[in-house]
Length: 148
Image (cartoon, rainbow, N blue to C red; front, side, top):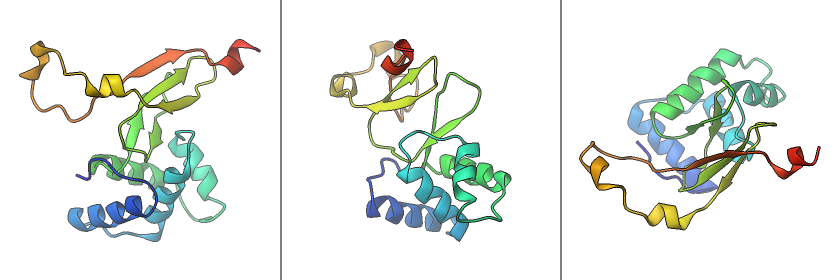
């Protein structure tokens, strides 16, 4: 629905517009969940977001966080990030970027790779359908884990 979001005020304007376009109310809980996720750099799970938000919204249920993230994902406001564990991780940074994932600690790091972004897709998949996103996920062991 939204496509690529920018940072800061532009993200919240896009959130408001996307909610309006989808007929969703922009509730206090939705706004706070999005705000927390957009300020996070660690690609938190729903559980981590819930723990962080309980300080500000003590009545917030984990189910509400899950449902809100699913709604945001459906409407293109957040990405579910591949992880090596079964727990889904999320991000609000939807601009072009890729991910490094540590197989030991699970840390996820964003990085830019213009060369990959600019490469044309292989001929054999061009007729597949509509490609909406192209990203690379690199798995390995981070320096911190290598040194322990």
